[in-house]
Image (tube, rainbow, N blue to C red; front, side, top):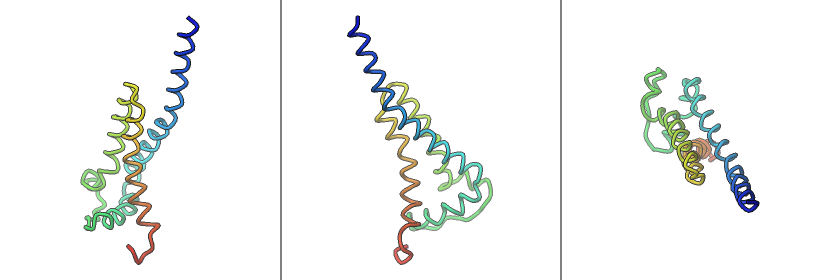
Length: 125
């Protein structure tokens, strides 16, 4: 009986070690989603130039609420929302590496596109 308690306790410790990263990614995705939806005009001004640079095409600069439902701005609130949902489902079936990978994708995409645009010298942009 003592070995069953130890193994259950060890399993709980392993699970609890993996959850903070997943929880942090849920919060980051939620912050990204809420930021884009609440401050949509500001985020359009911030994100359209890096997206146009990264994809080598231009996007309409229409600042209406309808533009938030169209590509590419929908990517910044639909992808984090879907990542939270699918990551939660993966955590429910105890697939923590899958949950972390799913929830890391939108955050990593945003950081890479936005970070590369602002940190590279203007001669490269």
